[in-house]
Every structure is written in C-alpha cells, then in structure tokens.
Amino acid sequence: MSAARWGDVASYALFALLAAFFLLPFAWLVSLAIRTPAEVYLGAARFIPEAPTLDNFSAVLSDRAFLSYLWNGLKLSAGGGALAIALAIPAAYACSRIPFRGQGAVLVGLLAVQMISPLVILVPLYRWMSTLDLLNLHLSVIAVYGAIGMPLAVWLLKVTFDAIPVELEEAAQIDGASRWLILGRIVLPLARSGLASAFVLTMVMNWSQFLVPFILLERDQDWPISVAIFNFAGSVSASTTQLLAAACLIAVLPAVLVFVALQRMIVTALISGAVKG
Amino acid sequence: MTAAPALRERPPGQGQPWPWLLPAVAVLAVFYAIPVLDVVRLAFSDATLIAPATGLSLDAVRSILGDPALRKVLATTVIFVAVNVVALQLAGLSIALLIVRGERRGLKGMAAFRTLVLAAWVVPGIANGLIWGLLFDEAPYGTLNSLLGSVALGPVAWLSDPKMALVSAVIANLWQGTAFSMIVFYAARRGIPPVLYEVAELDAAGPWRTFRSITLPLMRRAIAVNSVLVSVQTLNTFDSILALTGGGPGRATEVLALFTFNTVFYNLDLAGGAVLALLLFAAGITLTLLIGWIGRDRGTS
Image 1 (spheres, rainbow over the protein chains, first blue to last red):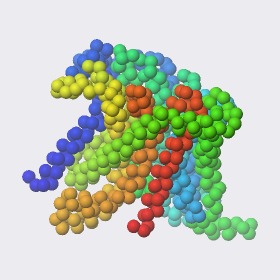
Image 2 (image 1 turned 60 degrees about the vertical axis):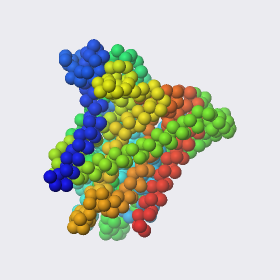
Image 3 (image 1 turned 180 degrees about the vertical axis):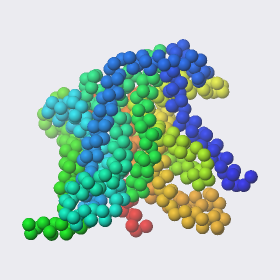
C-alpha cells in the first residue's frame, strides 16, 4: 500500500474520532428525547430505547406557551436579520463602489464593534429603554439585533457587491439612472444570494441570542425559545431529563435544519468574506 | 438643468459616501459609542439597576477592584480563554487541513463531516450548556459516566469538581466553537496557490516538511487574526457556562463576562457591573487593536 493510501486510512481514523465527538451530543440528545422516564435511568446501556416514544415532544409542545416561544424566536430573529441587512446595504454599497477617505477606518471600526460584548452595551441600553418605556417590546429587541448584526452584514455584503461587475452600473448611469435606482434595480437583484446568506446567517445568530431578550423582555409570554429553555431547565428536576432533552432538541432543530439546508451558500459567503477580510 | 449632466457623467467610482453611510454610522453611535461612554459614566457613579446615580464616586471602582472574587474570576478567565484559543485553533486547523486533504484525495464523506461540525456551531449557547449538562450528568446513568463505566472507568466528577468543571466548560466550548476556526483556516488553506504544493512534491518533500515550509508560513496571518477573533469571542462567552455550571462549583467556572452579568442582573449593582463591563471592553479592544496591528503588517511582510 502506498504512503498516500496509508494517509487516507489515517485520515479516516481521525475523521471517525472527530465525528464521534461532534456527533455524540446530538445523538445523545435524540436518544434521551425519545425515552420513557424508566429508560433514562439505563444510561448508555441502551442507546436506542426499546420503546421509543414521542410523548416527550407532545408533552413539551402541548404547552401552548412553548409554541409561542418558538414563534417569538422566529419573529425576533427574522425581524432582526432583516433590519441588519437593511441598515447594512447602503454602507456596504458605499464601501464597495465609492472610494473615500477613511474607508479603511469605517471597515475596521465595524469589525471592532463586533468585539464589544452585548453585555457592555446592554447595561446602558436597559436603563434608557426603561426610562423611555421601551422594555418588553419585541421592536426594541429587533432594534438591538439589527445593531448587533449590522457590522457582519456590511462585511459580507461588501464582498458580494465587489464581485458584481461595475460595467453594468456604468451603462445604467450613462442612461441617466440615479444611484439609488441602480442599487435597487441592478445591484440588489444581482446580489440576491449574498443578501440571502447574510440574512440567514444573522438570523441564525439571533436565534442563539440569550442575553438581549433575557434582559429586555420581562414577561414570560414575550420570550423567545432561547430564554424559555433556560427558564425551563431551571424548573425541571432530574426526573424530567427526557423532557428537557426534547425541549432542547426543539430549540436547536430549526437553526440546525435551516443552516444545514443552506450551508453551501452560507459557507461560500463566509469563506469569501474570510479571504477578503 | 446645468448640474444634471455633470452628475450623470460621474462614473460609479465617485460621489459622496456620507449619505450612504449615515444609517450605519447612526446605529454605531446610538448602540455602541454612546452606550460605551455611558458605561464609563456609570462606572464612576453609585447607580444601581433600580436607583439612578446621585453623583460621581470612585466607590464602585474601589469596591469591585478590591473584591477578592475578582482576582479569582480574572484568573479563571485567563485560563479559560488561553486554553480555548489554543484548543479551538488546533482543532480547527487540523480539521480544515484534513478536509482539504480529503477533498484532494477524493475521500467520501467530507461534506457530511463539515456539515456536522457546522451544525454544532449554530446550536444556541444556552442549549449548548444544557445539552452538555445532560452529557456530564454525574448520576450513574449520566451519559459520559455510564459510557466510561461500561469500560470500567470513572466515574468522573465532571461538574462537581472545581478543576474538572473548568475542563468540562472548555470541552463544551470546543464542541461549539471549532467550526469558526475551521472556516477561517479552510479559506486560508484554499487560498494557497496549488503550484507551491506541486513544486514541493517534485522536490520530494514529505508531508511534515511541506506543512512546515509552505502551509504554516502562508497561513501565519490567518492564524494570527483568528487567534484574536477567537480570544475575543471566548472572552465574551457566558451563556453556555451559565447554563452548564452557573459559574460553579463555587466560582470555579465564573468567567469575567458571567461575573459581570451576575453583578448587574442578579446583584443589581449597576455601577459595579459597569466597572466590570469596562474591564471586559478594555480587554476586547486591546485584542482588537492587535488585529489592526497585524493587519497593518500585511503590506510590508
């Protein structure tokens, strides 16, 4: 056997090891979520339950509040993602098409604010929103999501715009189209896939957000799923491990499914962003 | 009408950028710049979450900096960040290089494996903590302990032993965070011209030599930038630890971000929390300036 073949064998061995590590939590979560309480106590001895059950899911989902947590999560993530993209489009376009002094500073500044933990800015934001009576509003959370997601969106969209040939715009400009019109009619339609990746990526990040909604939303019925499962975990005892597993699975699944379905597109956007950045 | 033709003749490469930048700049000001200034003001006040500041004071700074817990928290933070930065990048780099090699050799399952690593990345931090909490469960039927038990090992006190709890927190973070480094390194590795590897092959350079002389030097910048990004991300991580250990046992896994969170939102000590937030901010900015410094080097080296 050649050295390269031995290398392949070694690669597969490493992949198997790594795959086991990355797969274990998912596999275990599913295994726990379909167990009866009695089988939870069997631990690893019975990975695939003898009597798999969906009762845990129906128990979790029969709580109507849980459905509204999912809905809130979706609403906040999508709203925040859309806002981040809307705010990012003009800035990304300017950075891509208009050379100006301080452009580097703007781009580095956008990267720098990403380093600021939401924890830092939430302390004053909480106070202001409390004074202005803006707490407990989904719109407030969406606004913060928009601000948090915008910097990354500018970077991703700038890379997307850079890849669109400028000649098309020059032609339109000769025909007398204004720059806003050019952006709306030519650039954005051509940037569809970049816009979509940036949107999905910011949305998935918003779905994971815990701190912002935890702090800005005080009422149970307003919570997104990320806050709700934290609260749920605090309320369940060890005897309901299977319920917690089912709840976690429900919270994790939407983001994972969307990401896996669209990963080729998103990863391409991220990789081109990583190369340019 | 006279101005119109002049406007029209402008190529797309020119014009006033500021109207375009206005929304982004306004957002940065309202949600970042002003809040950060306000944090500075709060740090030197006596405000609590429920009572406004009544005046300037250094009490909060003094009491937080004098708090014996802070020393412990900072030590934990440094260890947590340092170990994660090394582990995340070693894992990310190995996986990226393995995938690139696998793709070149036409090995099956590369896409599926990459998807699996990425799937862990999109798991919400809170869920990450809860899921690993189930795995680390120390009851006899807990996942890892019952797995270890089946080969006559353990049981391990994953979460109740202070040292082990920190290791457990690192493992959970590694599971979720590796994907980011993997993407960065995968992109950097793909950016290396294949011709260099062809030359190395002609020179009969072995894999280790090729890695040392081509891959590593050409990825140095990516590794440097990624180190900073990953350390800032890790510095700001607290939701997965909150859900996994709550910072315990004792303060064994209480990192700076979690300590800040607890100070503000559980102890309602706004001024103290602002001091800690400033520390967090300063640490983050210092690391970010490092990126700028590394980025500036690009042209010359």
